[in-house]
Length: 266
Image (cartoon, rainbow, N blue to C red):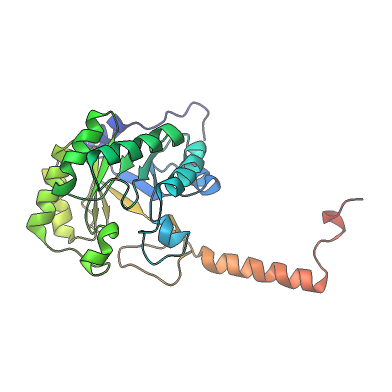
């Protein structure tokens, strides 16, 4: 990567919406992965609370804590030279009140040096988003399927309440969010919301007409082999590669082939 690379900023997102330039977003939870994704040229790194399912091995994101988000975000921010780093506010770190949300988001910005936070919710979170923005904290919204509400929704499934989702998206944008994630909604609705909003939409299972797309990186790399959402395109099969590499190492250790003379000190 060139040494004179310019970091992406919040105003770039608004400019790209006007220019109809598509925005790429990937999740990251650690330094080496974030560095590779940043060097590849991704526009935005999302430190998602999806780490609860992809890193910690839980069935939902609900167990992730604010301290854990800070821990992972610190690593990602240290790796990112170009990409905008956005960090999820985890479950129950912001829903109680706008004051609670400001405290949690403030910790994320102060302790990790990230550029923005993301929170789930539509109309019900509009006041909280407005208060965060008024406090100088950039916010990315998230409507449609909201993983933190999985218990209420009855599972991870496509959301089809079109009037409500459209209303939620408008409420989030009007409250001051600089972008809105649209998750697991019909493609036609994703295009309709994208056309209606003045801020960029970032789709995940929301069709091709959004202003940008986000994927969970372990899904993209083929590291989560037990779960294959319809909206994921797998660009590598690293799960099989890692398993084969580990098996070859185990065989070499068992046979005394590792380490050899060149790999040993004299």
